[in-house]
Image: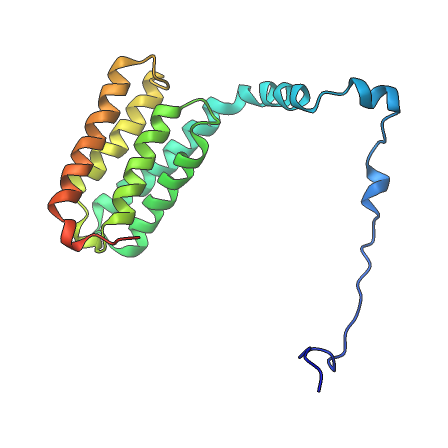
Length: 175
């Protein structure tokens, strides 16, 4: 008896229509010796950086719209998922886009969402403060550790979040 459960199943091999090797220019040995992939990546990042503020503003608009829609309605899993997803996107992109402090605020809000087992325990005011902080920090360019007010705001949001979670410690998931 065979150990492969699919051995008797009919199969077909699919050949890709294009050989991708034909799409790549092969460098000469001289070119390859001079090529610095890190410098090339940094140059590409520099070209893209012109769009960073627009991309961060777009992510912020998505968060603001999701929270505004949630604030008008009962906090349900569906509308809170939209807020969480927007926050998670900002958390993941903020550092790359030049907004590490905004990333910390978003990470802290994600942490709050993840640690509370029940949406009913989610404090509207604290979520609103995080969302407002993201908006204000992007608008004011409070993007790094050089901005003392921004740093203090992040620290305070982290403290308040930790205090709130400590009050609900028996209800918090251990993940």
